[in-house]
Image (tube, rainbow, N blue to C red; front, side, top):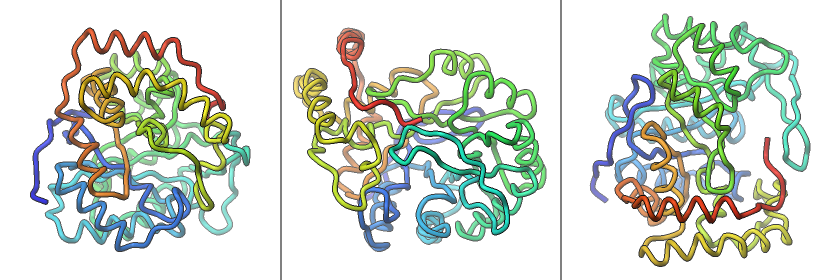
Length: 332
């Protein structure tokens, strides 16, 4: 594939391609097994197809696996051509206390530690894994329930001053948390689950617009559901922990989203392209980060960055989504 250009959007003062690439899917244990060769080919395909924005985390895979994979691919590129975002807080140092918080997954809770004393160590480990001298966009992966978010943000601000980080991001926060953090240090982007089957908080969206903060929707394809082809999930697939992918719920949800797939058919585009184009039309500073392991699907997804939806189509979709109840609860 030859390199292509996608429309450019801004996350605060950071310019990125209108669609990025979520690298989480390239580590084992997320959507089943995958080998590194296939993962690296997928990421190269995304970069070649015009995605200049890559999202990873120190918590994806074992012992920083995902960051190391991204780092190997970065070695074949000029560093300034790729905007690298990563997150911290799940790879808790030995001897540090895990801070549990409830989530909607079947196992009930995750654990994080975003104490300021650990933030520089997290960043230095990510820099080593990525093989780079700076991180373009650095997020606390989740707010730590035992540490004020403003304290964590202050520690990232020190990394910005030191030149190790270019921009601060937040992930999975509320409107009030965004406002408080932004008062400590400018926030470039908020990462939040947002898709056709998971609405964003209206208050969070309004605050982001007011403060000039971009939105990075994670799971913009509803963990793959909105692509229209998920019939079941197998062993080693993280979606086994998600109520929406229980066999009965998955069938009900598939039936209920049939009208959305019908709109895609009428427009001559794929359901995944429609879901991504719809998100892009919600706000000019929205940059979804779909992930895939298949180069053809990656190109298909990124092509959504050039799809224009009419006001009539958007209104029709909004009407459909307003009437569509999703079975299986939420993730957070």
